Amino acid sequence: MLDATNVITRALKQRIGWNRIGLAISLLIIVMSSVTLFRLLRDIDVEKVLAAVRATSSQTILIAGGFVAIGYVTLTFYDFFSLRTIGRKEVPYRIAALASFTSYTIGHNIGATVFTGGVVRFRIYSAWGLSIIDVAKIAFVTGLTFWLGNAFLLGIGVAYSPELASAIDQLPPWLNRVIALAGLAVIVGYLTWLRQRPRVIGRDEWQIVLPNARLTLVQIGIGILDLGSSALAVYTLLPAQPAIEFIALLVTFVFATLLGFLSHAPGSLGVFDAAMLIGLPQFEKEELLASLLIFRVLYFVLPLFLAVLVLGIRELWLSAGGRARDAKPDEPL
Image (cartoon, rainbow, N blue to C red; front, side, top):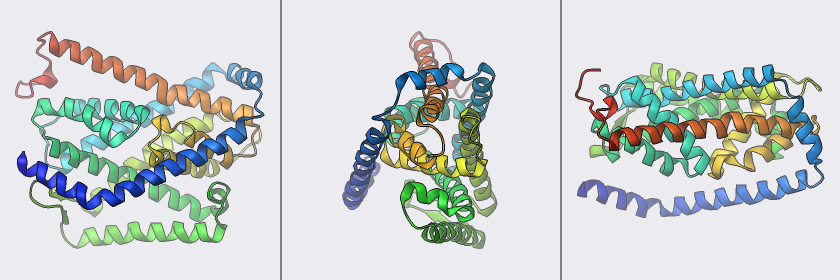
């Protein structure tokens, strides 16, 4: 434990500059998004927003909720894949699903997902003998899965329609296409690098054998399914007119999700919404805002309520002395 503490201390000292830069970027994104959102919403008619919410059919909301559910099921494979990657194959899927769903949902809603989600993960995985280092490795692999899927999907979309990203980042379409192609080239190069031999990063207890090229494609597939399902939920909730292609919504959604993640704002509040409003100017703001509000309830509010409820029941069961299976990994399932 002392060695691990020393490693963490050295790493923090080495990376404090990067941490400050990351904090500055997060604050910059939040401030810019807040100012933009204020300008976009200052003339909003609240009654129109509420009317648009009420006009959304129950069937549409159920379909969107189904896509959100698919996305959350996909999230469970983030942890399951990570556990296999670090060699903790004794942890069953149901525990991985519990840890993934609750840590992501609570962490993303509170903000600073790496830390808040990590606390939830450790609470669940510690009953199975996993250490803080193991949880840190899981966080690294799940993050890698997210970023690979995000970069691949965004790269394909922006390379195909660079003007969609230009609406948000204000860069010339040609430059966005160059950046997208460069990102895709990096992913191809990474896959080629993995094919040559097993790749190990880190030292001592912090070593991780990276997934090989074939498993990395699985990682990318998990990330694509996660983001794609959530984007389909938003697409379902959008007003019928004007009609837009799914690729247009997908690029805007992934871009908005990326900015929200980088901001570390609770639930990406303000950042995600501002990016969506900027990226989809063809819709009336009141109608688009109504769609985003419904999506927030489906994707953030309801899952957060369920995650807290599940964790609360689990804690009560454990504190009452119940022989919960996830608290006794040595017992037969």
